[in-house]
Length: 266
Image 1: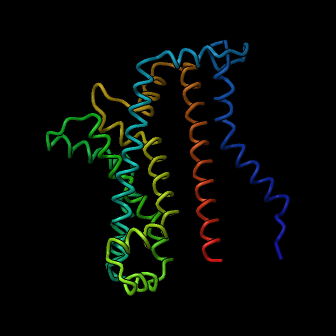
Image 2: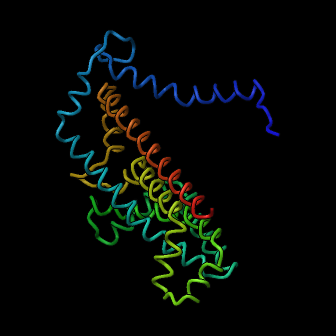
Image 3: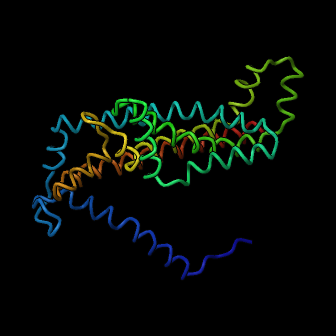
């Protein structure tokens, strides 16, 4: 028997979503304001978007952000997958120790992580810029991928690996033909989570970015400090729509993976 949700619970849920999304829709609404301020809507215009697309410097910053996000997500996914497989191979006590160390990086404040990387790169004489941002994003994305992949590894029965080895499969074949196909949903989840975290990060990036290199989060912060401009609204609207697109893509990928899994079991 399915329990019916109470009207109070539905009302509470609606209020929570309104609180979360009202500022975003408010920002999107005023991105089409011809008045140039957020104090009153004077008329509909696309001038702010046109001005945004004509900004060559901002276009380069967008490319920097996307390249860093894709590279960090890809590299951290590869490292995280092999890290999760390595953790799964240890005994229970050692697994708990490694997972605790992994979780410390997730719960640590971004300010501490950013300051730590800044000190590390400064001591090592490493020039701040693209590579410092990339390495930092990889570092805080790997633990996220590990947490996404490990549950799928725990679900996998050891008998699958034993059966593959009994049939003559070597270690590489066991990895590519058995383990990776089974944990594919977790791998995609880890990749998209790492991609989202990289696109969204500000604190760590703010510490490790250098002169001549910037990302969208740092640029929006700099633009906001100079005064409220509806360019920020237009840029934020595009980012919000891009995020929704990523969520939809991830949803369809997980749905397809789940459907294939059901058909396989049948």
